[in-house]
Length: 85
Image 1 (cartoon, rainbow, N blue to C red):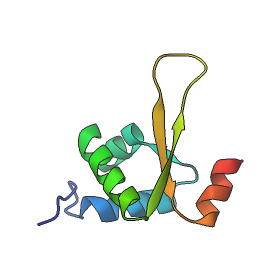
Image 2 (cartoon, rainbow, N blue to C red):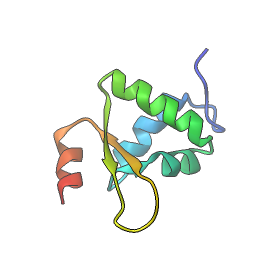
Image 3 (cartoon, rainbow, N blue to C red):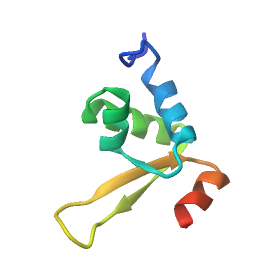
């Protein structure tokens, strides 16, 4: 049985819908917070969707602050165009 969000919708479907409706790529943290799921659950499902060819990611290394973050976006030309801006 697929893992579900608080709204009883499968996590994968929720992530795809969220990314489709977003005006920009979202970090794993943002996805988890908006869907009410843990960072770990969001991360696992994002990588699963990436392996399935449904979404893609880009690593961002901030100029200030520590670490890096990964942002996720739908794997289509429209999402790529938004990200390139």
